[in-house]
Image (cartoon, rainbow, N blue to C red):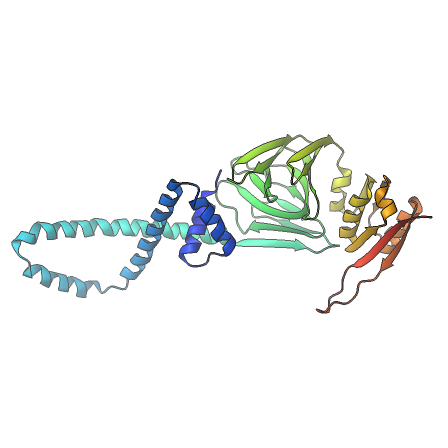
Length: 347
């Protein structure tokens, strides 16, 4: 279903010349969907125009203009009496209508100001953070993650956007479901605890449900939703972003929730998964040699307070690998690039 509040927000932004290119594309797409949408757009623009005109009316010198009108009325013939009386009645009826329209639009503009107030919380690679939303929902952000959310939830739903990984403790509110936007997919919840991993470079979106109920939804080009799966407690879903294919497994979830308590756990994980998660955790670029990449070798380990070098040393004790750490170099902007770790199979 389309979000009318969002559409009205775009129209108001366009009227005030504050619409960016992406928003203009969204509005144009909505206009082209149907004749009814274009008609509704025209009516809203008229209302906004009336509102601005009412603001201009406040500057009118009523006494002086009324005196001028009376003088003109005395010069009119009796033939125009009915027409003039009709004009007076119409004016009397129009003023309350304009006042009501202005009041409605002022309330709507207050709503727009609330909707436009978005916040972004971002966690650098190698760090983790925690925030609390206006409804009481707690969100834990993992390394290299970003959450966008309104300063205050309004309307019939609560919605945030996630890039990266986060653990949600959603406050229960069945009348206002909670949505996590994953760029083409959404997780819908009311009151529950779940973890989502949605890093841009990953081919999979993973969602683990610790408690409650959540649904995975897919959105088509015409913004229609399609329910893919409703998770049960202790279920983990792997979703291929580009193919809309998913796999559901039962698991204890410790591997997927340990990061909240500051632990990194591998349980029979392949080299690609280790490289991605290990690199984000320690803010380093992890590179496996071709021999390890081609093998079916898996890693099992747990890290908590260890530094990068200490973790690599422990990993080499339990796995047939060697490693080399290359320090980051200073860039043109005086920042330093990530450290690079080359992991090879032990000879």
